[in-house]
Image: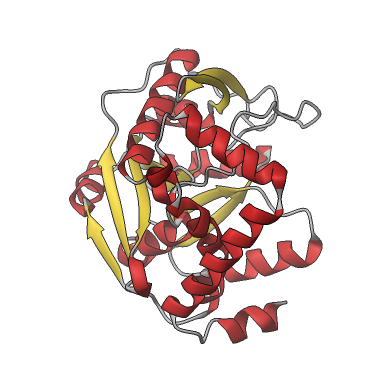
Length: 285
């Protein structure tokens, strides 16, 4: 599989995105369960068909662009709001980046690493290792690069995030990813309660880190990406229920900016797994 990914990495980005668009529609039309969840989630956000329809193909592009991002030549990246990162780094308190399942979240971390991480302020990204051994090895090797570190969803991984923030570095999380129980709280997301992680809020509150919102917009015809960075509106509450609601509200605002690139097929409203060990490391707000 690694050889296949490396071979595909030589293809131009516009072609990979074209292939991904087809794959996205094949998945949408071929799976009743996926299609129903996709449409229901978009309807929950009260979107019109024209708003969410482009997201069908975008979901496939999220996969098809990985060979280029992991093994190919650097892609074109434009920045919108990089000054917020500059200002936060000057403060030296660390940064918690919150990125929803919007656009290309893989390129967001890579772009930060290339512009800021190699100068001594690396980003540590929290991720859940794939269950398949071959895919786990592929992902681990592909994401290793200067200025970018990874932390598993375990107690050791959380300790790694805390250490990074205390050293004035950055961490990145997907706050709209459903965590195992009891690592979250139920908070509204587009008007419906969704189980929401509190780890990001606890990290920010405990360490005093700056919270920034970031996402990578996928430009048409393989022209690259735009990394959008915005500060969090107001400070996160020490009450984790309130903080989770604040974060979900912020994620909603980002998604509404470009609903055609959100991963509507993700099971955002599913019940969490209840048999996983806690990874919040006993963090206290």
